[in-house]
Image 1 (cartoon, one colour):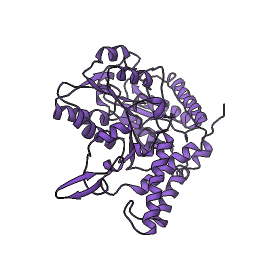
Image 2 (cartoon, helix red, strand yellow):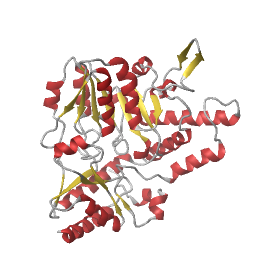
Image 3 (cartoon, one colour):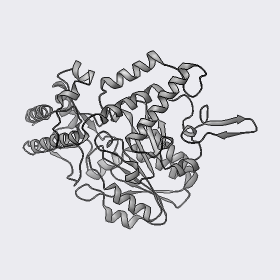
Length: 404
């Protein structure tokens, strides 16, 4: 197996090279951006900046080609059968809202059930609650086991012909838990339910193949996979996209407009009303291309080793522990403290140039189940090193001694 060194990729990230003392352990909130992404966006603005799908001039054609090439790059990254199945959105949150309004609003009715895992981000809870309030459908949480994994026995008992949708994360943004997606999807499909997978956290760490996965909807954000902010994507089965009505109206998403009636463009343009984030799409593609050029299996092994180093170190520090021990876990750890307040600890870490996240992490139902008001989250990425974890553990131990 190849050995991954964080030194070379760290050198690809201007913020990390300019702030050489910074230890960035908040990648679950947003990843840093490699120079390739910054260069791609800058080159677009400097060389071919024009609106897409509309211009009769050469820059308009060049911009459209770049935008659609970016869509192809995203499709290739997740092994989509067609780039037409990739809809650009502002991020995973907008992608989920699109599915809720378009597919959910046209397909669900009173008495239908939406099953949502307890691991979900608010973005995969609130839109479904809003849809349920409009349609009379019901939202039901899938509980967790004592190991903080999804309770598949409980899920099996909950599934029924009334189940229309199951929503599940590919990786918890709080615990790092990776649910057994293939088994969950098969269980849902057995009763005729659709499955939406939130891959926002997983995409930077795991290889996602939509054809092998067999989900119906997949959502993700660029900024969590080394790309720009303000853009993400929805992938869906083509037959679902073709049957879904438009969500927003305006330019780009139409075939013909008149006061006698309007007809709509086929997917994906049907769901991309208005001027898209075309420069960000180019940056998104650059991020995915950069990641594909790396040894992803070596990165995964490296991140796992760093998490194991973190877990072993935490076990030797009094007054702190990692929440949950799921069988399959990504490089994310939520720390709970016996007496110290997470915000106080985070401030000491920040003073030592160590960036972490504190709070409920947009997962209040999970926090309630964990009986926590908030945690300190450490999230590891390809540019982190053993030195980063060693430094974190040392400052954390010193801080807890001071706060004792």
